[in-house]
Image (cartoon, rainbow, N blue to C red; front, side):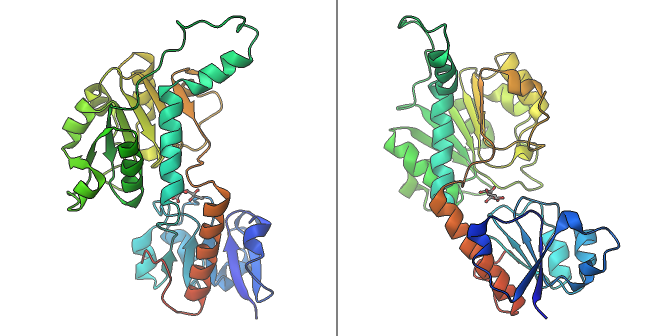
Length: 313
Ligand code: 8YV
């Protein structure tokens, strides 16, 4: 019998073509609670961050592997997976460069008011060049504070160094190689109080959930810009709305939100000092290809009860 693969979303042809007829696919939304097919599932390919807890796993007694398209696995209960002998794979490192590029793209868009400027340049209001409008924030020579100096954070630091920025960072612990990245380890309070740009590049964990709350935002400079390429849950969105509306900080750029997407009538979406993208951190053709290949390799290894290429647990 072909291996039975559960998908949380239809896969694009570029990923499907990495499989052959040995695999049969089932879409999560097609499986009712009592569907007998749950019991036949051998592997779960998670594509769009579906919550995958013990309850979900217990529906699939034959499940050998959960292969996640992406590095962040905050939506998967890895402890429950380990307890059930289920391997969990992800795609680390492959997306570091693309996600760091996007961190800078959003940083620069917010600092130099690219989105507001784009709208204005297209509008009928733009009738004459005016040097007094849309002044932004200097990027070169400013200070960036990176929260999460993992492999993505390090790539952000490399880019920041190229922009002659002073780099401070905060992590669970100091990275002994931080001088390689021209980065100085500081406390969270120092980072928030001294940075012109605060970049979130950390995973969402119990200790980072809600890290950027009212207290943190009030510690930031009123001229500072927050950039979130981590997970929406790292930021308290009600506090961010207050911060952006009341001038506690100057602007924010978000690639991720919680919930994702935000309700279409959310007040944050009406603000001019917010730049927002639909979770595009790793969305380049090359990176997505590499992630697809690794996700499928992990899945096939898990099915064969072999060690995964990139294993979370
Ligand atoms: C992916 C991400 O786009 O890797 C991650 O954790 O958030 C993104 O790079 C996402 O996982 C694809 O669903």
